[in-house]
Image (cartoon, rainbow, N blue to C red; front, top):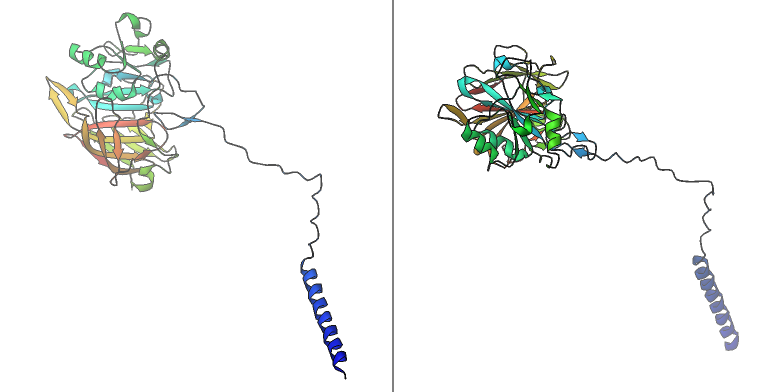
Length: 348
C-alpha cells in the first residue's frame, strides 16, 4: 500500500471518530418534553378558618369578646359576720381576698369586673390593709365608712372611693331587708361603675395558663381533696375539691356549705393561700402585705408550694415557684386566703 493511501485511511477514521463525538454531544443537549398544562377547571380551595379574635379578662384569664371589658373594676368591703350571710353577688366575683378582722372573724375584699351583678353586699367599714389589696386594681372601692384614719388611708390610694352616706352614693347605696343593721348596706353595682366609666380597666394581677390542665398546680402539685384554714377562733373555713365541676367548693366554720343569696355554694377555680404576718394595732388586726412569705396554690385538685411577694402598695402580688418561675393559675375566679402566721393551712 502506498503512503498516500495509508494517509487517506487514517483521515477517514478520524472523520468517523469526530462524527461520533458530534453525535454524542448533540444527544446530551436534547430538551425534555414539555409538562402537560393543568386543566383550566382545576382550582385550589383553602379549608382553613382563622379563629375569632379575643381579649383576655385581666382578673380571670378567660377569653372574652374583643372590647367587651373596658370598664373599671369594683372592689367592695363585704361583711362576713354570721348575721350578714348569705351575701349577695359573691359567687360572681373575679377575685375575693379574705382577711382577719376583730374578734377572730374575717371580712372580704370582693372584686367584680367580668361579671357584675345588679346588687352586691352587704358592705362594711374599711380596714388599714385594704389600700394595699385594692390599689393595684385601680377602679372603685365601695364600703360603708370606718375609722377616720383608715378612711383617709383609703382615700389617699389611687382608687375612687364610693362611701355609704355621701352625696354621690345617695342613689347607689341603700339599706335592704336582707338583714338587720349594720349588716344590710347594699350597693347597686352597675350604676356605681357607670358613674366612673372614664376609669381604666384593671391590670392583670396573676399569671394564667390556657386551661385547668395546663395550670402549674395541676401539672406539678400534690393531689389535694380538702383545704382547712384557721384565721382565728371564730373563722375556720374549708375548701373541698369537686371533680365533676373542676372547682373548689367552700364551707364555713362548723362545716355548713357556704352559699350566696341565690342558694349557690360559693366556689373557686383557684384557691391561693398566703401566709401573712398580722400585727394588732390599737385593737385592729392589720395584715402586712408589703414583703414576702410562703404560699400554696390549689388548682385542678392539686396543690403546689410557692412564695409570694409584694413590693409596694400599688404593686400586684407576685407568686413564684421554687425555680423562680411565675405560678400560672387556671382561667376562672380566684379566692385569696390571707392566713395569719398564727393561724394554719392544712392540705389533705
